[in-house]
Length: 323
Ligand SMILES: Nc1nc2c(ncn2[C@@H]2O[C@H](COP(=O)(O)OP(=O)(O)OP(=O)(O)O)[C@@H](O)[C@H]2O)c(=O)[nH]1
Ligand SMILES: [Zn+2]
Image (cartoon, rainbow, N blue to C red; front, side, top):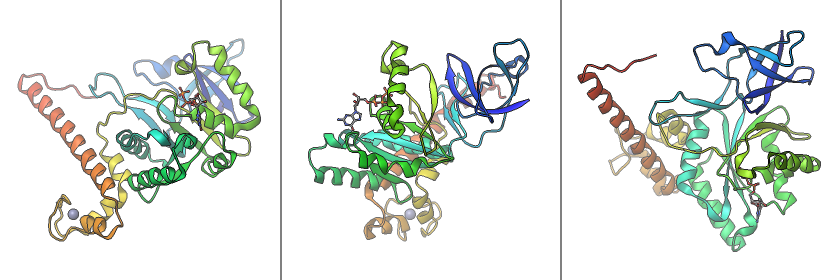
């Protein structure tokens, strides 16, 4: 029995790196996948059997996950899909000159919901009109992101800006990189890897279908640093049951709210509201409070709609199956 970590998923076959550094192409044990749809994902720690005379090792067990990135299905028809596991940090990449704040709000909530630490990287700073534009936009993003998560500005052409990212991907840590296709995630990873750029580019070309159809998800080792998982094409950033993610992403507001006069304060003009006071004192950005309100009411609405659907179903005598 060997232990290892899934470092790559290639057309469904996990590639597992063992403690000795060997990489083994694996299959799942039948007993593991029977009935339930459990599959090892990138980052998973697994136990392996290596049967003699087989071309693949067998994954007999997936060890409990420390963190996981889950894509949920808003219709609840499909099982939630785990995209990556056991990472320490989520980095959200957005293009500085074309930041989408509404998307960023969602990315922050999803990133925080994993329980990992979170940072934001604003890419392609060279496309900004001026330095004062960079400062203004970075400031607005900082306001939205809040006091706990770091915001960095990078440009592929400026090696110094890339160096600042290294502290986020320290040795022994694993980082998941998310962001819309084309924001410059691969470029960033290539720059961090340095000499190995060529190799990475070749692998992508062999694919033959272009950048947007990367079928394999891979854990990349940064020389002198940690590991990075570039998650290409994470689509459908809807919000379902994201309450814990919202609480984590806006923990400063949750903390302030405990000092409001009314326990059920909505921070919309009630007397003795500590949250509004923080906005007036300049300690909390109005835009951040607006995001918080918008996300809260959106999830509340979805929850209500779902409960209503459930009531209708049970009235018809078709109680929702659980399990
Ligand atoms: N001007 C400018 N262009 C950049 C910068 N970084 C990346 N690009 C360009 O942006 C395009 C997309 O970059 P990628 O690194 O492939 O983006 P990605 O997020 O990895 O996209 P997917 O691989 O589709 O997920 C490429 O043409 C890059 O050359 C930058 O700092 N400045
Ligand atoms: Zn309040």
